[in-house]
Amino acid sequence: MSEGLRDYTLTIFSEDQTGLMQRIVNVITRRHIDIRSITASPSSMDGIFRFTIVVELDEVRVKKLCAQLEKQVDVLKAFYYDNQEIIFQELALFKVPASTFFENEGLERLIRRSSARILSVEQEYVVIEKTGHRQEIDELLASLKEIGIYEYANSGRVAIVKPMEKLNNYLKSLQRSPQGEPALDQ
Image 1 (cartoon, rainbow, N blue to C red):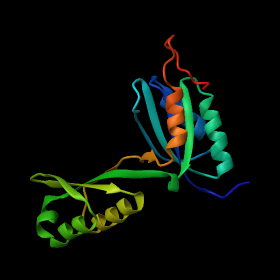
Image 2: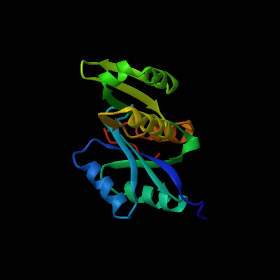
Image 3: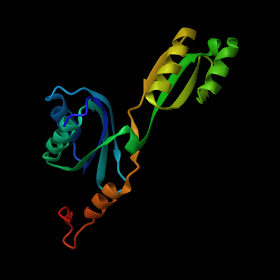
């Protein structure tokens, strides 16, 4: 039974292979699914890579998508989570004119009120960092656009799951067997 569209965070574990990200993106885009965010990084286990992808789907389609992703060579496992099952953040960097920063007292208050921080003060510009949820970042961006902004960059979502049982069981299944092969069927 479909529960309607909502954001799901996919966590995909794989071997670190060249071209795998493109294959994963192709699986998603061939199904006309928009990727809202994508990040890739090493996982906590040596030799295992982690992709974190945010999509807007219903639960039936996200289950099918995970099953399709797991069919890819080098993809070890794909999980999906709704926002209540994860702790997540994004990071944004804003470059604003130094003159605006020094001449506008409201900018410093905005930075404090937004729980942002100043990373770098240069002669021509100031770099501000904001870590938080997309809505918080978008609100700060809108305020900075009114004041003046040179540049903006935003990372994808970084997430850690709350329910540890499913992830722990999976990570235990990746323990190397005596022959050096992953023991995936446990």
